[in-house]
Every structure is written in structure tokens, then in C-alpha cells.
Picture: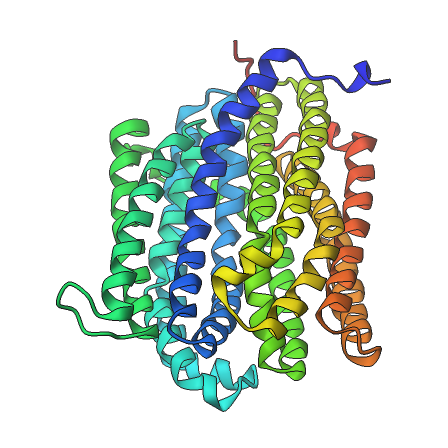
Length: 456
């Protein structure tokens, strides 16, 4: 039975050549938020809580960019595998235009109506000034993220994740210096606290967008022939949206459920809210590995399906899943065992540490479910199977994560640990159903692109 699900050795090597740079890029990207949290924790715990709530909202809004980013990644991977350069460039161009426009509109909305969104979250009055400041600055420059997400997706789909990783590494270094200077007032700059963190993050994202543009046109697409867009390839945009819209709906629903959960945690008090922020930052290692191997598997699957090598894609997915579960289990267990000293980096408040440790214990189970969800969700997306998985996701997350989270955490009085157990039920149930759907192999009957050709 094991040999039936064993991937060819060459594909395994390619998988991890992609996983490594994607892992480092994702780690470095998420480190931007961790650095903000760590440095702000030395400013005040309230600042951490305020920025944590804002980032939850921003992450939900920024997921609108996934309307095209997810579809762009899938279609570019397929066309890259099929060696269809014209279609590849058409998808790139239409996606950049669409996301840039959406990004500008969202940035304007966040700048003008940021306070109203925070009021709807029923954020505590003592957190509002810092939260509003961070929302206006980081949200107002959100279009940087819209463009950067699109370019990174294209580079990854073309098996060139190293370039995005290099840009992100540079940006992390700049962000550390920016935060140090602007939060605490060094190198002649005023001490701006939360405002300084927001300015530093936004400037770094602008630099990242510029560098990614340079990488794209110097290393992948030297020029974009205008003839490819006369007439405008609306069909390519429709193909992208067929993948992107359901995927974005799932992601938005997930973040909406998380915002609802934050509202519930806010009912428990600031210590629980702050503990959640610290836990989310600490468990990030296991999460980003699961995400990275899922993204790498998705790219390989897209390339292989575009080249009519569907069975190879199927075998590779099972190999990737086994490795993801093993490494995630080791990482989440180590995080729990080292939980107290890790939490001590962020705070000396023993009440917060005790609350967080309960959640870290349950997180060992949660990460196994999340690794399964990410792997098979990305695989199904890469072959165009998006509608049914979205329906599965919506039901599970709102029933288990939200409803059961409220019951366990608030009604039954189990606090943050009870809510975390509900999250684990959500991830494990979704993972099981998505795994079974992938194994049916119904997706092999789909063909998202016309006339694919084999690659060597």
C-alpha cells in the first residue's frame, strides 16, 4: 500500500527545492508582524493588544487580494507547465491590473473608515487611540501588499521563489532598524510607539513592492508585448476569477470567523486577548512550514497537471502530506515544551503565560489538522476543484470554530484553552473531508487549460 502512494524521487527533490525558499520567505514575511509585536511588548501590553486586533481586521480585508492572487498562482503554474508563454503573460498582466485597482480602493476605504470598523469590533476604549493610528497608516498603504502578493505568486508559479525570499530578507532587516528607530526614538528620530511601528512596516512594504517589480522584469518577463492584450484577454481574467472568487470567499469567511472569535475573547478580558496574540506569534513556525509545503505541492501539482502528468501529481501529494504531518508534530511539541521561556520573551505577566500555556498544549493537535487542511486544500485548488471544498470549509469553521468556540470558552468557562480545542476540532474535521475528496481523484477529469503539452 505504501508504494502505491510513493512519489518519484525526482519530484520529491523538486518539492523541497521549492519548499525551502517558500518557507524562508513566509517565515521572514510573518516575522515582520512578530518583530512589531516583540518590540511593542516592551512599549506596553495594551499596544500589543491594539495592534493584534487591527492586524486581524487588516488580514481579513487584505484577503480580498486573493480574489486574483490564488487564481493567478494556479493558472500561471498550469501555463508554465504547459510551456504556454503567451497565456502566462496574459494572466500576469490582467492580474496585476486588477489587483492594483482593488488595492487602491481598499486602501482608501481603510484610511477613511478605519475608526468605524474598529467601533464595530467593540474594541476597548483604552486600545482605540493606538488601534486607530495603526489602522490609518498600515491600512492606508495596503495597495503595496496587493501588488506584492501578485508578483510573488507569479514568481513562485514559475519555480522562482528565491527572488521573493531575497527581497523579504532585506525588508526584514530594514524593518528591525525602522522599528528600533521609530518606536523607541533612536538615531535622531522621535519615539512614536505604535505610530512608529506602522510607519516602519508601511515603508518596508513599499520598498518590497518596488524590488519585486525589478525582479519580475529582469529575471522572468523581460517585456510584456502589448499585442498580447489586443483585444484584452477577458477570458484569462475570468479563468483567474473562477479559481480566485471561491478561494477568496473561503479565506474571507475564515478571517471573519476569526474576528468573531476575537470578539468573544475580548469578552474574557485584556489578558486573554493578549495571550492569544502571543500564542499566535509563537506557533507560527509549525504553521508556516505547513503553509510552505502546501504551496510548493500546489505549484508542482499545477506544473504536472499542465503537462498531463496527473498521476505523478497525485503521488507527490501523499508524500508531501506525510512529511508535513511529521515535521509539524515535532515543531508544535517543541513549542509547547519551550512555551514558558518563549512567552517570557514577550511578557512577565504570569496570568497571561498560564492562559497561553493551556492553548499551546491543545495546539499540538490543532497543527496536525491544519497541516492536512492546507495541503489538500491547495492541491484541490491547483486542479480547479474549489466550490465543494469552500462549502465544506464554511460549514466546519462556523460550526466548530465559532459556535463550539463560544460554547467551550464562554458558556462552559474553559477560557482560551477551550476555544483552542474548538479550533482543533474545526481543522481536523475539515482536513479529513478534504483528504477524502482528493483521494477520490474526481479532479483528474478536469482540464482548466486547452491543449497542454508535455514537459521534459
